[in-house]
Structures are given as C-alpha cells and as structure tokens.
Image (cartoon, rainbow, N blue to C red; front, side, top):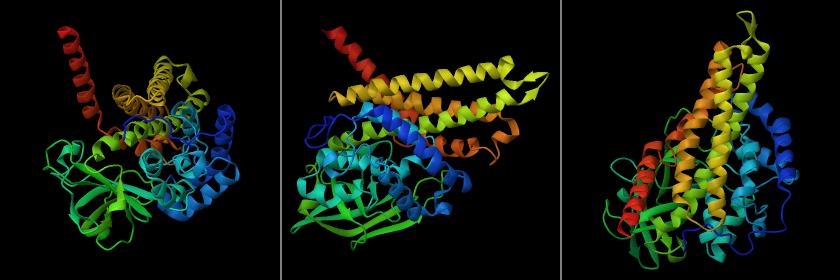
Length: 407
C-alpha cells in the first residue's frame, strides 16, 4: 500500500460548493455548538459526553454537514485536503465543533486511514459506521516508557501468530477516545525488536473483546475530547487474520497515510479556535478604554493584534501548501512537519496574546480564551512534539544538501 494520500475510488462525488459549506458550518457552530461550549466551559464530560456527541452530530447531519472528509460512498462529503481546510477551521471556532461534524480526533484520522487502507469488508464493518457517527474509535499506538512515543521504533506491544490469527499483548497509554470507543486500531510488533525500524502491523479490534481492557483516564489539561486519554491493556487479545489492516509488517508505512493528514486537520481545527480567541480579544481591546484611549489604539496592543494577524495568515498559508501536496499524492513529510511545528506554536502565540490583551478577563471563564488556551497547548506535544518535527525537518534538509553535493 502506498503511503500517499491519493483519493481512493468511490471517495469523491460531485464537486462540492466549498464556500457554501464553510458558510453553513460557521452558522451551525455559532447557532448550535457555541452555546453548549460556553455553558459548560468546554468540558465535554460535563456537557454530556457521548450523548452530546450524538445530539450535535444529529443536528449536523440534518444540515448536511456531517463527515465532510469521509468518502461519499460511506455517507461523507468527500472533500479533499485543500477543500476541507476552511471547513474544519470554521468548525474549530468552537472546541466542540470538530466533534459536532464528526471531524474530531481520533475518528477523523481513522476515517482517512480506513478509506485508503481497509479492505471492502473492513470498510463495511468499521468505516461506514464510523463515518456515520454510529460508533467512535481509537488509535492505539503510544506506550508507556520505554515503549513507542515520539520514536515509533520503540514499539513494544507484540502480535504473535496463533492458529487462524494473532495474539496481541502489550500496554498503551494516552489513547484518545478509548473509553466508549466501538473499535481500536492497534499498532503491534510482528517482527524485529524494540528499537528496530519496521516490523509493525496494524490490527482492527472491536471493543469488549476478551483480552482488551480500557484502564484509567490519564488526567490531562484538555477537556474537550470524548472518551478521554486512557491506558489500555492487551492481554492475550486474539484477532483473526482478516483483522490485519493493510499488510503484515507494513504498519509504520501505512500509518503515514494517517499521520500527515491528521496533523493538518489538527492545525485546521485549532486555527479556528485561535481565530475565535483573536476576535474576542480585538473586540475587547476596541471597546475597553485605558490611559486616555481605546486599548486597541495603543502601540503595544496594536503590535500584538498585528502579530496575531500575521501568525494566523502564515499558518493558513503553510497549511494550504501541505494540503495541496497531500492532494497531489505526495507523502508531504517536509510540508506537514513545517506546517505542524509552525502552526502549533503560532496558534499558541495567538491565544496567549489574546489572553494578554484581555487582562483579567482573559484568564477568567467569562471569556472563552482561557479554555481555548487549555485546549490548544497540548497540540505542541501530540502528533509529534515541535522538537521532533524540527529534528526531522533538519535531517531532510541535510540529506538534500548532501545529495546535491554528490551529484
């Protein structure tokens, strides 16, 4: 299976009216989703958890907004990466917005992966209900130290051959959405030893299967993701041969189908949240007076506002470059690393400046900025810390330089 993201057959329908989708998504988020977020301070458990998800997704379905990224043949809108960028940004204006249109992590990334890698039978059993919002899912990759984290080669969970299938044993942690997920995509080692490249395989495992246990929620600062970030134990989990997703020993290669696009859709959603923080701050600064003028007319405040505009525009531009490369069938490793590293940090800067512009209100629950800061800060860690992306960006640059020098 290629690691590119070329759109599979059956995934695209008639050319969508993207500006109309953006406008309708923006309207839906402001009318339906933001009031719930504001009432519960962005805490999805307090707001109703999975019940809230079903309610919001039902409202999105009624407006023709559900699963804009999913293939048309499973009920989605079939948007390309470039097309979904502004739609996801509009949804991300609320920290519940991605959830509402069924484009939140990890389900959005898993839809993308299944659409490109799953067999027809797997598409019917797993992809179709996931795209429709009937079930949620989880991607079980990260492990407690010294297992896989930013370095996937450290993968320690094992899958061993047994008659008719595989036995999976290992421990995972920080598995987003695990509590209440309908199924898991599990990364396990089928060859080699921890520290060796390759040898990983992805497996599909239904929740509730003997040998699969969801443990405690790891307490984290963010509160907007249904199902939390959990510890998961695999102790003698038996899956059949047809549970292999992709090919045996090709799990790391196939995972790239998911990782690049998922990083970009994270940027899209959190960009929308940063836009909200910025807009709230500018409106506050324009109305609040101090030192004989509106705060927005003071030089230092104007610099923060301008820097926010620059960071938002630059993030959008880098995002679009990466999405265009993905749509063209490139792995876009360099483009997505650049957009993720810059975007994660720029979004944090925007929200932090917005908080500063609003003073005491900025750190209170009277404005949404503090909760947005709480939600976006982990983005600099998950899907690859900024430092790991910089390491990869530099390695590629040096490799290219050496190739040029040797030619």
